[in-house]
Image (cartoon, rainbow, N blue to C red; front, side, top):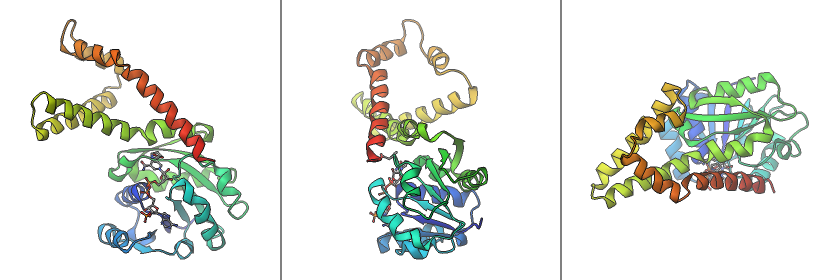
Length: 267
Ligand SMILES: NC(=O)C1=CN([C@@H]2O[C@H](COP(=O)(O)OP(=O)(O)OC[C@H]3O[C@@H](n4cnc5c(N)ncnc54)[C@H](OP(=O)(O)O)[C@@H]3O)[C@@H](O)[C@H]2O)C=CC1
Ligand SMILES: O=C(O)[C@@H]1CCC=N1
């Protein structure tokens, strides 16, 4: 399989995967990204030194890996555009939420391997996590090629395709939940009289430090929470408010709603 990579739709997620792949050692000279505006093309050329075009069919010619980075609603039209131009040995890798691999297989030349992935935006700084699942014609070698592509974006895990909507709800959408918490914590600090700059710094570093501690200690989050929560102390008072407002239940409901929405996107 050749190393030519075509990124079709270099938006938030396509660009994040592109950035992660390049910082992981993928050669910029092997990448072409498709765009719809000259401003975006210029940004990609200047930032990553990759080739750009607005012609998706031209981009996929000779590409061994074709990354579908457009919104789920735009995937059908995109596949129609590129199907006749795809290299017979190409692997189609998609990041689109919800759409099953059968959606692609029905629209692409018979037997063309499809790998469905669920990345997240921290991929841009090599701190993402991506779940990957093979379609009917994707082999272990195809999965390995996708793992190689994504190696610079962070962790990569293999998953069963039936689980990918749940993965989307947790790690795909998850960064947005975390940014929501970061914003809420910082604004709470402002309410308590801290400057915006200080409050934001405290919130950001607290999330970063807590995440690293969780990861590096290997301890269960409940144990780590208990280590912060002195009997009769400040944290217990704060946590009681979160429980009274059913924050834990809200996370469960948010994940279920995101999973259900992924299913709806499949049509
Ligand atoms: N954002 C995230 O955190 C995650 C997103 N995903 C999936 O990633 C996909 C993209 O989402 P996201 O990056 O957020 O969305 P964006 O809108 O940021 O990216 C889509 C990009 O595709 C471009 N585009 C649309 N149609 C075409 C076309 N025919 N040819 C070339 N380019 C085209 C758009 O251009 P223009 O801007 O000009 O419209 C845009 O730049 C979705 O399918 C989503 O489900 C998956 C996991 C996480
Ligand atoms: O919001 C969305 O639909 C996409 C999929 C996961 C994250 N962003």
